[in-house]
Length: 289
Image (cartoon, rainbow, N blue to C red; front, side):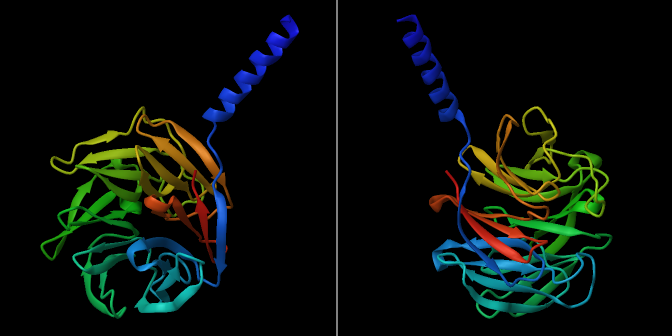
């Protein structure tokens, strides 16, 4: 009886451990044919996603960059070079009926109906504009990873909104209620192959107060970030990993890929995770548990 009881206890303990484990997402599809894809922005209501293509080096002003449209259902490319005439487009956001993308040292406004460039907003002194996000009021925020700066477009004017070492070379951005959550890359910046790992940072939109999310323990060289309920799904470009990070700062690895796991997109209602594989010229879709 003792041996049976011990075995049962071990079985129950194992089941509890498995129940608490983080399930690995299942791959749904993978699409090749892109050119250094950096960011994916899903538009679930229309069944597609935008994909920004650097098409070269991320700081080269070569005019080779473009934005693609990709089907969410099966991963088929709807239009490869849907919007052209860009240099090295990265993060994207929709606001006020316009599509915005970060392009090295300027924010580009694009017509979602035609793919035509409508306006370019210069960011003097910026060297690596990276992710883009819009708040509920329509203001657009852009990270400049190399200078630890966040810019904001409001009322048709692009201005330097916040800068300082406490931003830890910001990369990914998402809005969380009255806060801007930043996925930090870590010193010495995006251009360095071996940067110090960093963490998620919270910035109050009202007074710009900066604080670590949770205990501030470093996680990795963070890139894309998307909210999923009370957690955040975050990519690590250097390690090629994807994490689920709680508001406490606790990080659980949910997926391990190759280096170049860039600015992810996410459809929370479908648990659909979209990952640009920057070094492999692919975009992959996963079902998150």
